[in-house]
Structures are given as C-alpha cells and as structure tokens.
Amino acid sequence: MASAPILITADEVNCLIYSYFQDSGFQHSAFAIHTEGRLDHSHNFQKRIPRGELVELLSKALLYSEVETHWRGNAMTTDCKAGFSLLDSHVCSADVAGKIPSTSAAPVPTPAPLLRDVAMARLDLGDAAQKRKASTPATDDGRTDKRFRKDREVETPMQETPSALDARGLQNDQISDTVLFDSAAARKAKQIKSPVQEEEELDPDAVRLLQGHVTEVFVCAWNPKLPNILASGSKDAIVHLWNLPVPPRDGNSRAPPCGEPKTLAYYPKDEQGDLTSLDWNQDGSLLAIGSYDAILRVCTSDGELYFSDPKHQGPIFATRFSKSGKWLLTASLDSTACVWNVKEKRLQTQYKTHTDCCLDVDWLDDEFFASCGADKVIHIMNLARESPLRTFGGHTNEINQIKFNPTRTRLASCSDDKTARIWDTSSVSATEKHTFVTSAIVLEGHRGHVSGISWCPRSTESGNEMLAT
Image 1: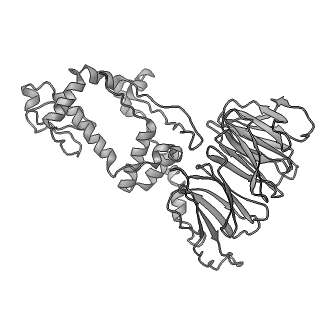
Image 2 (image 1 turned 45 degrees about the vertical axis):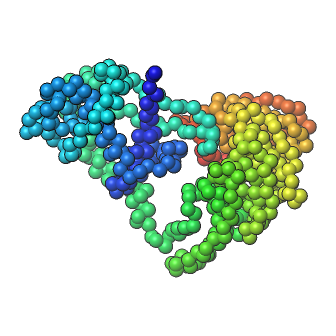
Image 3 (image 1 turned 90 degrees about the vertical axis):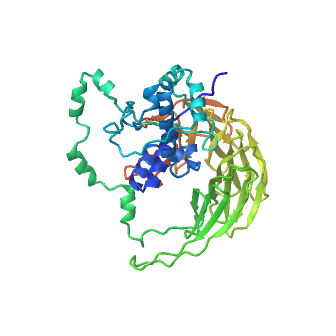
C-alpha cells in the first residue's frame, strides 16, 4: 500500500520561521518575514505553533538522517561515534576526536529500535528515501474564497544555489569571491528606519491604543456625524463602540484617557463569525454589520440591536447604506445582492444576477447600484428591475472591490487580474435596454492581486480626479 504524500509548502515554512524568530526575540526579523511572506493573508498564520516547533522538527529530521545513514547495521555504522549536523555531511567514525562537526548543536540521540524498524520499512532499502528527496513537494494553489473563500498564494523569492552560479560561468572556487553583501549599501540601509523602529520612537501622546478585543480586529468605521465615535469589529463577532475624548485644541496637552467601549456581542450561528463589514448611515444613527455567519445585523449608535435577518445563505462581504438611509445593500458568498428597507426592517428585493459569489456593492444613487463578483463582471442595477441595466466585462479574474467617484460619473474596479479599471456611468437611465460594455480605462502596473481602491474626495486644481489602488 502506497504511503500518504508528504507535503511541505513555502507558506508553512515561513510561519515556522516567523514563530522561531518570535520565540528567540528577533522582533525585526519576525516583522520582515511577516511582511515579505504576506503572512497576514495565510490561513496557516492563525494556527497555534508550539514554542520550539521548528527546532523539534529539525531534530526529527536529524533522527531520520541517522536512520537513513546507519540502516545497514555493519561494524562501521554500529560503532559510529560521529554526531549529526544540519549543515555538515556525516562521515561514520568509531573515533569521536576530530569528527564532531564544528557547529554547536548537541549530538542527537540514537532512535529506539522501533523507530529504526519503522524507518527501515519506509526506506525500502534506501531507494524510496532517495526518490522522496528528489520529488518536488506538491502545493495546493486552489483559491476557494475571499478570506473565508480564498487562500492567498505566498510568493517567495528564489535564491541562487552554487549550481546555478556555475551554470552562469562561475567555478566552485570562485563562489567565495562573489559579492553577496555590499557594506556601503548596508550602511545606507541602516539609515532607513523600519516601521517597528519608527513605532518605538513615536511620542506616546501621539498614538492611543484601544485595548478591548481579545481576537484579531478586521474592520473599523468612524461615525460620520459623531466623529468621536469609532466602531471596531473582530474575529469573534464582537463589535466595540468607542467614545474617544476630543483632543485638546492647543495640540500640546494630553487628551484624557478613553473609557470602556460599549460591547455588542452577537454570537455567530456557526463557528466562524469573523466580521467583514461595518457601515454607518449618513446621520450616524445606525450601523450595519456583515459577518461570516451570514446574518445581517443593524444596531443603533447606542449599541441596541435595531434588526437582524438570516436571509443570506453565505458570508456577507459588504454592507452599504444608501445616501438617504432608506435602503441598505448587502453582498454575499451566496451569489446574491440584497436591498433592505431600513424603516420597515425587512428585505425589499434579492437580486440573483451573478453566477459566482458577489464580493462588493456600491450605490450610484437611491435608485441605482452596482455589484461585482467572482464571475468577473459588474452589473449596474435599478431597484425596479431584477435584471441588470448594464454589464461591464473585461476583467480576467474575480473583481474584489468597486467604488463610484464623488460625482457619480465613473466607477472604479479592482481585480485579482492585477489591474484596476474605470468605467463610464454618466448616462445610466432606468429606461435603457441591457447592454454589455467592455470599453474602460485599464490601469496596469501591479504585480499581484489588487484588493482595494479609493477615490480622492477632492479633485486637483486642474479638475482631474485621483484614484489610489
């Protein structure tokens, strides 16, 4: 019977190294691999890694190497006193003097006979071990979900090995002369402060740390009418409403401390209750909450539940109040967009126009809205029709976010196809027949997925609008 495949991904290795750096107190190194490895997008990053796990796994690897080397059981291997090292090749010797590797690693104990027998069976006289070493680990590149639905691939830079250098014309004795470190560049790099260093040097009065959540904080939103009210939502479906003291006008005095937040604890119907969206209505009286548990919740600025509804059959990715506050728009993994009547606390219409999950929505005005999804298209909808007025097509991968500009004449979109696009929405009419539009301004330059866009609220002096991606 064939043994199960052994899979090792670069993302798992990055998480193990990050944990090792944290355990060893190498905070700057941990910050670097967290950033460059994009660990905040990794599903493995949320897993608990025991302290010293990387060293434990490397120790087991040395035990396996000992079994692989000494399986024959002849006189030389039986009496071998030489230790094993991660970096030095092993040479059997009955004389320990002069044979211990130069590293400071302690000798690895000989495995028990049972471990040796199990390893012998899997080695199949050594051939299987060589084949396994030569095989390339399989990776799972399936992308199933946005945060819940998707596991982002972690791109790791390739490093040149000595053999690769040889292929470019360098001999083995020249490799030691290859410039791998430039001291002048290093001195220049030392002058650039990392975010961690800058954070340590900040004036303590310039930053206020709001402590109250016990799990990761995913979303936050300022109240548009009461600028001292901040809503924050975390992985455990908890929403905090913070009443922040007004900073002193002179800019010199220290602001009074922030009190305890109001806690809105809405326990999810499923194990996963990550909050995905917080959106205030225009007068700041209501807060819409989107969650992985597929339940829409709307609460008041005082923290009281206004209404909730379980109509969606999948995680809710976006919640958007219309400008008048009469309607509330939601987007869900169940491929639908829903418009809710806020005053009557009920579902007005559920739009089933996407063939894959609906990822984002935005209002053009109180009569029209746009929705986008993993089916690579954007629909312009009218409240009075259940079918699209227009469909924008051109993206070659799922569309993550859409935003109308302040004048509502352009719609920007961004996608996993590494582009952002700008669409003309200046002439949308309720009486027009459905059209499929492909013409758009394509913004290229990103080397990875584009996950967010934002229009500048004010145009430049020349009248041009600015968009950040």
